[in-house]
Image 1 (tube, helix red, strand yellow):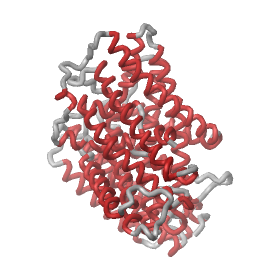
Image 2: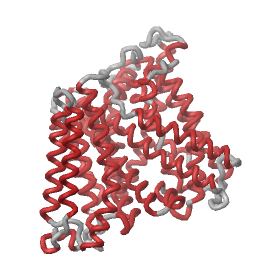
Image 3: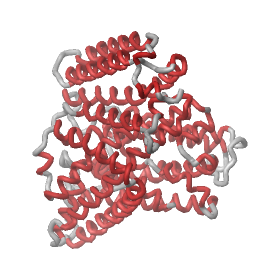
Image 4: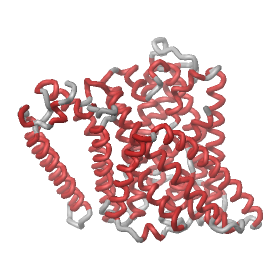
Length: 533
């Protein structure tokens, strides 16, 4: 249980991301997060998994069990929507990994344009959807192996870094290094980066279905989660110290999030006289892991959304499957929204900015979804007699409820503050552009989930949601509005934010007018006609 949870919670890249955000003061943050966030969070997940063990322990089933079908559907949607930026980010990492694996340097990144980066990412999506459909079980096995290799490389980095520090007589790149170095400056920037810490450490809800499969959940599950917190603390705290050995925390490279792991393994290899060996081992480990993860993610999340939300709220054309049982229209929706996310970032200055922005977006949507976990925990502790479980986190219901509320509040506030762009000068045109596309991405990903039940109601009422002219007009207007908004966002037009808001409202109003009209059944797409209504 501990090893399974460890693979889902922390990785080397997570350490890199937060080191660039906070420098050496991230050590202080990791200590607080491991003690006051990871441990209670994972123990709450254990109780939720135990309460809803007959439903598989999924996040949407927890909310459905406490608050009914619609909120369960919306939880499933937001969980799926949060996976879209993660999938795009994973596809981006595949491209970065390929460049390092075959060239041993970052030169490949400088040789391609933003548009070529987006095209390669899109092609990667298509390839891995095909691969997953043909080799699904092997991909799951490969991702497990890749996760194990990731854990090994984490320990290799930390151990070799500290042995190297001893060999060098205690020399560190971060100078001066005092206790003040690891104490954060509690300003807006610091609190706006908390969401990235939460993004790095969430995910242990994926092991919830296995809680009741343990021989003695009451005794063994808390032990496994304490081990998780302890090892997570070791990897993050000493991993961050290791980065401070090789990088000056006062002058961190701007591309550390994208290339930091390669830089540090290359420096360690050079220090030990083995050249680029560790760099290439890491490159292929990362490529191996991200390829398998992307394939499983694209397929599993789409199937989960389509199958878990049922007929009541999900339009029939999205639930439609081909002769092999594959939700082909669901795949199209996944790829379309992924392409939309890529389009939002294509006007950023360079590939590194796109990579960093996607991470920033992940640190908004992923912690936002984590709020559902604490909400569900509060609900079961509010009426503990109705929700009995083999494992109970904190026997006193009022104290347990208060702990759940505190974590919910912290996560929600961090999510809202995380909307602030990172890694770019505050107030610059790029900063404003990233702020706008952060808001647009969240509104579209979450908002679409509120619209789909209305589309389903139209299917039930008329037989189809929209006819061909309606679909074509709606899609065309949305694309034009998005492209126009992106153009204005990347420009230096005065009051561009106001203009983007106005054109967005106008576009939505026109779409609403078109969508209100009764569809013509004789002029509908075949996919809708064949749907199960």
